[in-house]
Image (cartoon, rainbow, N blue to C red; front, side, top):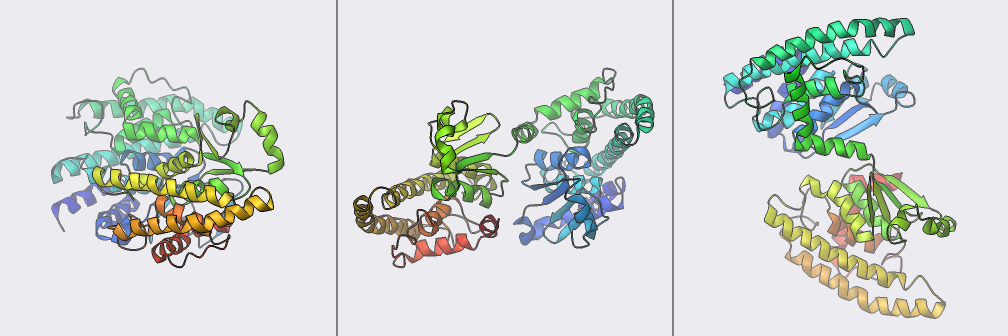
Length: 469
């Protein structure tokens, strides 16, 4: 066993045996390519509580994760009683993490696992084994204070009125003891700036302090605890809030789910739906009946009317977007592109992103010609079909040539892991029932590379899940 792994085991002892197991699993993460190819899934209720510190740890470390939020009243009883569920395979409680074949429970263990994948992997605990050991043990100590503080705060929030009143009566003294201890720990720190150990950004100790202060449930500010006597503790929370990764995460959470607004059919919105699905982005798929469209379009307060009076549109917090290429790009930006599927360096990503836009342009041109076959009188549609039989082969041949030049192995344009927007665009124009080349009787077999892209997209697990809903 190397010195660094020994140091991590030593630090884990401060956080308990469950946390030690999490760290040991995480230490092997880099050796497991299959594990690295999957996103960790955090399972918790739709609120802050004991799952929030793990969310913050993932966010601060730049680790993309699946934030599965379950309803306490509707979903939790069945999940808890199911021995095959992730909580059922652990202790029948949440938060839990599932990452590949590995599962963890207990809030400190999940937070440590999230920190190991990102924050700790970046070396924020120190530059040598001694620093890592000392600072790791301090992380465990602050996690213990965080758990004690949460326990005291929960007593104010659950139970009958007498129990909650007793909890609120005892909270100021309990909080003062823990906050004073944290203030003394911060007085002894060697790091410049507000954080416990690292000037670059927060570690788990900093996030724990931020969470106990700022969480809406349970949080010291929300429960009216006086924090003025603890300037160093407050400085930690303020510095965490300014961290770019945390600020982005908080903004995303405050924005809620993106809402896609379109008719109840594939059409110009299907590419955006596919981009959300493949990127693992949960979204609200608002489908407007044709009969309701005139009233919605004329309503100046509607999202379409605030844009160009057309659909698809996206509403995400205060963000309003229209035009199908823009909505598809936004969906890809939230998920697919964020996952690095366009390339590992800026130059490669820039070239591939431009290629995405080129393919999107071809997708729009093909769709425009497809629609000419579907709307108008019989003569207009017949002329559209005749024109399509001339234009579609030219577009598909061009896409075939682009695919022949690609550097990526496998069927996709750029990435072996999974499809990007260009792949989804090819799939959409070929396979969409409305409007789609196959549905309109266009022979696509002379274009084997395009067909391979479409087949690979159809086989993607997220795409299958989208169409199974």
